[in-house]
Image (cartoon, rainbow, N blue to C red; front, side):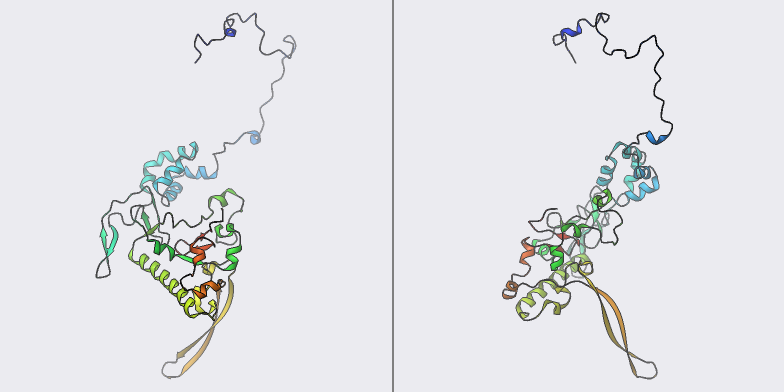
Length: 335
């Protein structure tokens, strides 16, 4: 707003516009014939399309599609989706009350979250007020829980989730571990969909999202203790043996999804007893399995059984998380 004090002198002569020069000079003699104006485009090829009006925004205007999307996200994600642009907000606003009721809900809502075990094997349940703004699946058992039912694991349990990768999975670019597991890829690697649906590295150390249910707790601890004991036994008694002789823990942490996995053929021998005869018949069956590559066995770990997996725990080497099945980058890696 321009005040009277700050008003420049050039505005004093605005009343007398006849003495001032016209801002635009005439390029055509007014007595001559008028210039023909450009005709509008005959086709719609020259019309500028709105960038936010695309197939996805049109799908959001359809209530059945928006309802199925809302069933897979929580309230916070639904709010972020509606605030992406004005077109998304205009399509979702008419159904905001219906979509809010269809969002993810914690499975412990109204039941209570398990807290401490009882003598009969069951868990004592503490009745908590579950929320719906931050809800997601447990990274290990895929149980839907809210932020109030997330268990805070101990540091010892976090270390037991680490698995060693083979030499090929350690040296390949980090982007290969963040790509989709399906082959071939459903979209181009440089497309917007590939960036949006790319897998993220493991975040269990900073923000673990695991439930405290009895089956999930027992399986996680059992796998971690079994893996740790196998490495400790190998460091103590396996000085002259190869890691490939000890089964699954000597393989890559990605298991069948190892980037250097190979398909092998195995013969199974079985004896079947014939009915009413008593004789046994031996049968051989062949099956094909996908086996991961062997991990590297370092010499310093053979001498001291307490130094196994120190490279992965200290972040000196890339590792694999057994909880969320994602890569754990090293400290020197950037993504």
